[in-house]
Image (tube, rainbow over all chains, first blue to last red; front, top):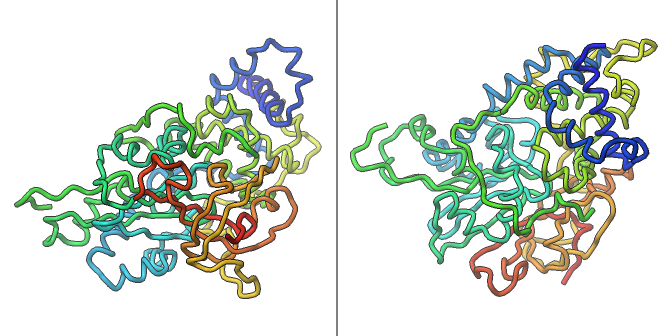
Length: 234
Length: 220
C-alpha cells in the first residue's frame, strides 16, 4: 500500500472515532494517539482522501484546480472595493446598494455561494458597523473572498460582541465614545459588507483610484480609511 | 447544542492575531480540503446546516486546537461516510472498494465558474409564509438549550431586543440540520442593546444585531 494511504488509514479511523463517540477502538490505543496523528500529517491525509475520491469518480481533479484558482486569484476583496467605490461616486447606485445589496452587487456579477443574501451597512460620522460570525465563520465570499484566519479564530469571534471597542483598539481604531457601534453577528444566511466612509482628500480621484484605497478590513468594519495627505495623487 | 463553537461573549481566548499579506490558503492541503468540500457539494448529500452541525460535534478541546481547514477535513471525511459516498472501510484504507461502480463527478472543471456563481440557499420571499413579527416590535429570544443544531447563540437567550428588519424566509436550521424538514420561516435582524446582553458596564452606544428565526422569538 502507498505509505500516505497507510497514514490516512489510521487518521481517518481517529476522525471517525471523534465524530461518532465510538471509543472502543480508541481505548486500545495510547491516550495521546490521536494527538500524534491529527495535527502532524494533514498533507498526506488530504492527498489520500483526494486520491480516493478521484478514483471513485466522486470529484474531478481539474475541477479542484479550478476551484482553488477561483478563490486564490479571481475572487477577493477587490470585488468589494469596486462596490464601495461605485457607491461613493454614484448616489443612485448607493441607494440601490443600501436598499437591496444582493441586487446591486449582482450588477457587478459578484454572485455565488455565501453571497446570495447580501446586506450593505453604511458607516457615517455617527454610526460605525462591524461584522462577526460568533457561531462559525460566515463571510461574504463573492465580495471579500475567503476570510482571514483572525476572522475565523476564537479571539475575534468571542470578543467582537462583548468588547467591540476593545477589539477595534487592537486593530488600531479608537472609536469616539459618542459614535454608535453596531456589531452584526452573521447567525443566519445574510452576509454583510460595511460601506466605509469616503476618506477626506479624495474628491478628485477616479472610481478606480478610489477602489484601490478600500481595504478588506474597512469592509469588515475593523478599520476605517485614513484621509489622504494634502496634495497626494493616486 | 451548547458547544464550544458558540463562543460569543467568552473570555480567555487571547489577543487577535493578524497576519500581514496573508495568503488565501496557508498550505496546499488547505486549498485541496476547501476544493474537495466544494466539489462534493453538487452531489447534494447534505445541506449547509448538516455540515455546520458536523463541525459542532468536534469535541471542544479538539475544536480549539484544530485549524479552520482541519475542522473542514474532519467534517468532510465524516460526512462522506455518513452519506455513504464512501464506506468506512474506504476511509480507513484509502482504497476504493473494487466492487463499487466508478462514478461520474457532477462538477467538471468547465462548470466551476458557473458553480462558483451558484445560488444554493433557497430564498427568500414567500408570500405564503407570514411573519410573526414586524420591524420595531420588541421580542425576547427564547431560552432554549437543544442538544442538536441551533443558530440561536447562548449570549442572546432570554434577552429582549427590537426587530430591525425582516429578511424574509429561510430554512430553519434546528430542523434542517437533522433531516426534520426545512420548516421555512421568517428571519429578522434583531437589535439588542449591549447593556441588555452584558449588563450596566457595557457602553450605552453599543448594539448587537443578531439574525434570528421566528421560532427563536417570543413577543414581549
